[in-house]
Image (cartoon, rainbow, N blue to C red; front, side):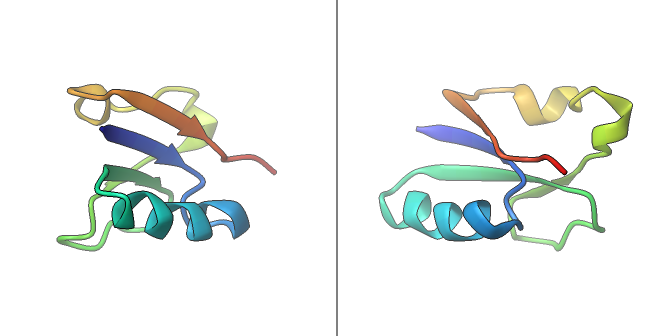
Length: 68
Protein backbone atom coordinates (compact mmCIF):
# COMPACT_ATOMS: atom_id res chain seq x y z
CA UNK A 1 0.00 0.00 0.00
CA UNK A 2 1.02 3.61 -0.54
CA UNK A 3 0.24 5.55 2.64
CA UNK A 4 0.36 9.30 3.27
CA UNK A 5 1.20 10.27 6.86
CA UNK A 6 0.74 13.73 8.32
CA UNK A 7 2.47 14.37 11.63
CA UNK A 8 5.09 11.78 10.68
CA UNK A 9 7.81 13.46 12.75
CA UNK A 10 5.71 13.58 15.92
CA UNK A 11 5.62 11.09 18.78
CA UNK A 12 3.22 8.61 17.19
CA UNK A 13 4.22 9.25 13.58
CA UNK A 14 7.93 8.73 14.23
CA UNK A 15 7.13 5.24 15.54
CA UNK A 16 4.49 4.46 12.93
CA UNK A 17 6.51 5.30 9.78
CA UNK A 18 9.29 2.73 10.43
CA UNK A 19 6.64 0.13 11.30
CA UNK A 20 4.85 0.75 8.00
CA UNK A 21 8.02 0.69 5.90
CA UNK A 22 9.24 -2.48 7.60
CA UNK A 23 5.88 -3.99 6.68
CA UNK A 24 6.58 -3.26 3.01
CA UNK A 25 4.41 -0.18 2.61
CA UNK A 26 5.45 2.90 0.64
CA UNK A 27 5.12 5.94 2.90
CA UNK A 28 4.94 9.61 1.90
CA UNK A 29 5.47 11.99 4.80
CA UNK A 30 4.08 15.52 4.85
CA UNK A 31 6.50 17.76 6.75
CA UNK A 32 6.55 21.40 7.83
CA UNK A 33 10.35 21.54 7.68
CA UNK A 34 12.37 21.58 4.45
CA UNK A 35 11.98 18.09 2.93
CA UNK A 36 15.09 15.91 2.93
CA UNK A 37 15.94 14.42 -0.49
CA UNK A 38 15.26 10.70 -0.79
CA UNK A 39 13.21 10.51 2.41
CA UNK A 40 9.74 10.44 0.84
CA UNK A 41 8.90 13.85 2.29
CA UNK A 42 6.77 16.61 0.80
CA UNK A 43 6.42 20.15 2.20
CA UNK A 44 3.14 20.97 3.89
CA UNK A 45 1.74 23.97 5.72
CA UNK A 46 -1.14 22.73 7.91
CA UNK A 47 -2.34 26.32 8.38
CA UNK A 48 -3.11 26.46 4.65
CA UNK A 49 -5.74 23.75 5.24
CA UNK A 50 -4.90 21.98 1.99
CA UNK A 51 -2.62 19.17 0.90
CA UNK A 52 -0.51 19.49 -2.26
CA UNK A 53 -2.02 17.54 -5.17
CA UNK A 54 1.16 15.50 -5.89
CA UNK A 55 0.95 14.11 -2.36
CA UNK A 56 -2.49 12.66 -3.07
CA UNK A 57 -1.65 10.84 -6.30
CA UNK A 58 -1.66 7.05 -6.15
CA UNK A 59 -2.53 6.77 -2.46
CA UNK A 60 -4.26 3.82 -0.87
CA UNK A 61 -4.63 5.37 2.60
CA UNK A 62 -4.11 8.55 4.61
CA UNK A 63 -3.15 8.57 8.29
CA UNK A 64 -3.67 12.02 9.79
CA UNK A 65 -1.64 12.52 12.96
CA UNK A 66 -0.85 16.23 12.71
CA UNK A 67 -2.25 18.41 15.43
CA UNK A 68 -1.36 20.81 18.19
